[in-house]
Image 1: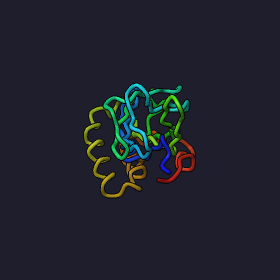
Image 2: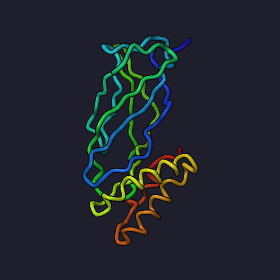
Image 3: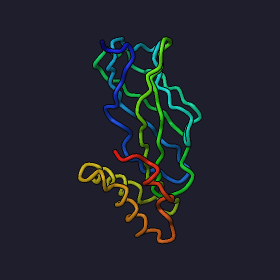
Image 4: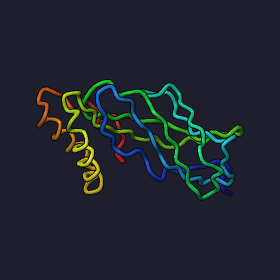
Length: 168
């Protein structure tokens, strides 16, 4: 029997290019794999407390969402603290008055530019979009190299970033 409340990630958050101090945009597409239709008054996407969130409840914006259909949830989260290649694992769940469905962790990743590289943002956004299509597993490495060429004194990756985040 199909559970009443279930979901799967269809499209996780894309890589972002942010300026130092800029808040982080979060958007995911989730498929309703349960037996009940999601409605605006009963369903929320909840981002559990963590490094960038204090427990954010994102209401369903466009419903109802029948079993098999998808919904997009988006929120604005606090800024990453430092320039460089940043990432955080986000725990989430779909809530309904009768039950919760916890989803697998999501990786939210960003290249945070220092203020002096503001004018190069659009070029980096285009490069990150291309890298994401050509070789998604190499985006982090390429972004680190890109930053190191422009700001040699910047430590583009916090220690143990790669080890702290699960592989996709």
